Image 1: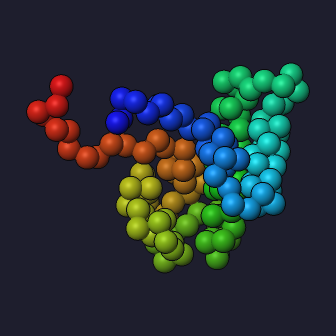
Image 2 (image 1 turned 90 degrees about the vertical axis):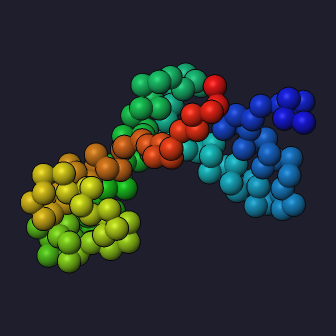
Length: 129
C-alpha cells in the first residue's frame, strides 16, 4: 500500500486542512494565519519565497523565541538565565545549553540551542541497506 500512496510533502498540510476540515470557519482562520506568515516572509513582495527570505524568517522566529524566554525567565534582569531561574525544557537541558559551563545560559547560548537542528540520536539499524 505504501507504494501506491502518494508521497506526502510538508506543504500538503494546507491541502489536508482544506480537504479534511469539519469546520470551515476554523480552517479559514488557520489558512489565513499561514497566508499572513508566508506573506510576511516575502520581503521583496514578488509573490515568491527564496532561500534567503526563508532563512531570515527562521532567524527572526528564533530571535523572538529567545527574547520571550529571556523576558519570562530572567527574573533578576541580568540578561542570562541561572539554573535557579530555569524552567521547563531550559531546566531539563540546562547543562547542554550552558556550553561555556559558567552556570548561566546567556542569549547567545540560548539562540544556538533554539536554532539547532534536532539530531538523530536513535541507533541505526545495521541490517537495513
